[in-house]
Length: 482
Image (tube, rainbow, N blue to C red; front, side, top):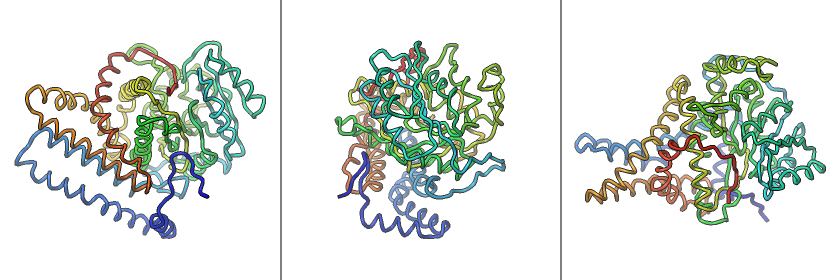
């Protein structure tokens, strides 16, 4: 009997045979074969793109140009993810393009596994037990209760009596960043690894993150691969599960091909101690538009890893009195940030529309804040990494304008065909992502949910960016997925 973890499907015999054959080949041969297969799979989209590009000078319009741009971006992401990405935990990848010496980790580095929690009594035990059950030997577990008032602290105290767990109980609510910095103050690991309180970690996840960072000392941070833990909770949860797969398997993989993953996601985020320790005060005390900013936890910390070569010294000088800075001054290096598909984690996604929208608003606020930091230096990390980052930013910023034009202005001006063409393009893009999901998960019918996520993004989520901008100062620290 085959036992499957959440979000996993067995590969087809043909797919498994091809993977075994590729794994046995010389790295150069394997890379060339994979690139050729990727181009063959994308050939229909490339032909469609070429046809529309040839016709563009004879009938230029904004919708056609936008459609071409989105289609070209989708093709590039898919090609990079499937032809350039190598899992750093599975096999050695290319070395960094810039000449710089990176400190090597010990063969078996100590890992501090850190968690901040607030009011998660229903799910915290499964999360902590999964952390304690990982198969990595030299592990320190630290959990910070951020002034919970629902009985979470009592659950943690009971678990601390059963498991090798350090539990810190705060009487004042500090927010997720402040609570995690308290955990970092007692952490003694070479690698600081974070997860979220609504997650369950695979037993081998920590080992894969460590393998990637030991094998590649240029990696200052590594993101794991996340799927929905409660994908069976309803259609909304299933849609998010398929969407998560694409965001990690394709978007993060494409960014990882250039060592510039822009967000090491909270469900499983591994950082070299040297890469973030001096910047923890700046992270905890982050301010935006003249007020404390409690969001952007994942993106902002990743930004400090990516951009410290240019902004690290100024950040440290701003918090020179902090023990995180004065205790030991780590050099500002041009770290790379990667992603390992082998390190699995599952998170509870919102199953109700209200919770889902609140989560999305928080993420939009994080995007806005991070754009004003990471956007200042991402152009320095090379043309490919810059194109991926700024291209995505431009798409997010333009989405509300384009949606308003095609779904509001066009129907009011008897241009219904424009609306129909726009929606067809949205469904086409979602279907392409869905087919990529089906390629990775043959036999899994959930791929049909991906076009629904594309429609949801354009019809609902695009409108949230202006709202997030207007409510940036509203700060709420909650992880409920109900």
